[in-house]
Amino acid sequence: MLRTGQRLLLTAGLILAAAAALTAAGAPLRVNGSTTVNPVVAEASDLLRAERGLTIQVDTQGGSSGGMAALGEGRAEVAMVSRPLNPEDQTHYPKAHFVATRIGLDGVALVVSADVWKGGVRSLTKAQVRGLYEGKVKNWKEVGGPDRRVVFFNKEAGRGTWEVFAHWLYGDPKAAPLVTLPEVGSNEEGRSKVSATPGSISQLSAAWADGKRIFAVGIRQDDGRVLLPTPAAILNGTYPLSRPLMMVTDGPPQGAAKILIDLLMSPRGQALVKKNGYEPAAVGEHAK
Image (cartoon, rainbow, N blue to C red; front, side, top):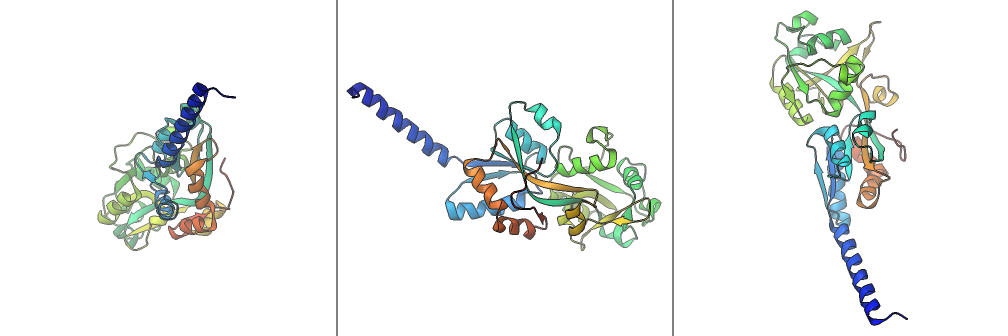
């Protein structure tokens, strides 16, 4: 039998353990990362708040790479990522065991302002995009468009959108040259800047190209084919700037993170992916 002192210690230990469990249960789930993934996660979080009383804090500071940094440094439990994971992610945080769950698919579009589109620019070659990005093409008339100065709004480095773009254009984001272009952060900011600025172009999630204020131009191949960020081309990977939308955790998802990811992978969560303009992923499929 336990002595009185032992019983008191055991009781105190149980109380402390219960208190710790309650504290952990009440702590908010911290989610950080991509502005592309954010609309889906924000809606799912609202559902879980209403239905299960979960508190979920969603932040998009720093985009995909910012989310991975927050996860690797223990400042977040889930990272929202709109690019493939790369070896540097693991190198920077060797103690972490990143597990990525693909919740959907998207394409990075090259979007132009209405005057450029109406002026005849409906597709661009990779060489033309490189010239626009590096400032060698300064007027749209050089690529068959209107007599208008080119304004390239560059997505911030570290954003998943920029990394997918730079990988396509240069083979490796590290190979992209330093440029002095005005930068945009979120998809909302990019869309607003392009729609309000004549002669402009930027990289943007294809789901945000509305075909009214901003327009997604095609990628013209050497054989003359034009590849567009259509749902079918994004799903089958023929569009060269297709990308996964992922939720990343340190180790397999647990607790509130698992509840959130399970919802996103359920039919109801995949309907949210579709609602926000992205292509749903197969339920249960994990990104490598």
